[in-house]
Length: 156
Image (cartoon, rainbow, N blue to C red; front, side, top):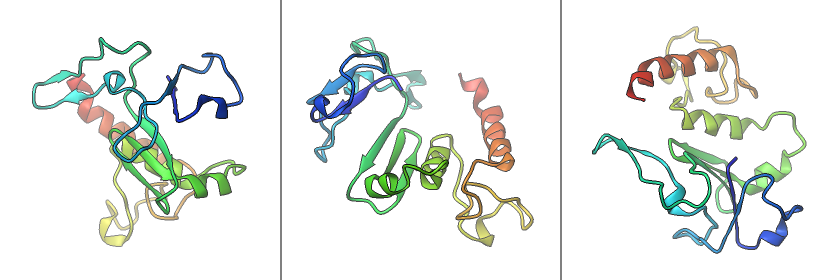
């Protein structure tokens, strides 16, 4: 974590920047608080370079994590995750929150497996990315991530 976006930073139980700076007042097109655009670092595949974050007064970030009231579960993208505020709050005391781990997997490029036709093979082991087959990250998730990183490492 490199920062926190909020409509009102007084809603947090701490006031210092020990867990990263607070960004107040910056909102996206949907009205949700967001960290400043100038701090969002991404790889521009068209120009083959990283975005310019020199105007960022804090530390640049690569992905965002949103708790949203208007979605039932979650969505994971390479730029961040959106997950249900209600589901998160209902499962906050759980050791593992399945849908958060699953959506973060998408941030690393892992695909969904929602049925036999989308599995890499018929005997592919359980995975947090395979609908409801595991509530935790498994060795197969780790191997998928390693395979992805092996294929993209030379780009960075």
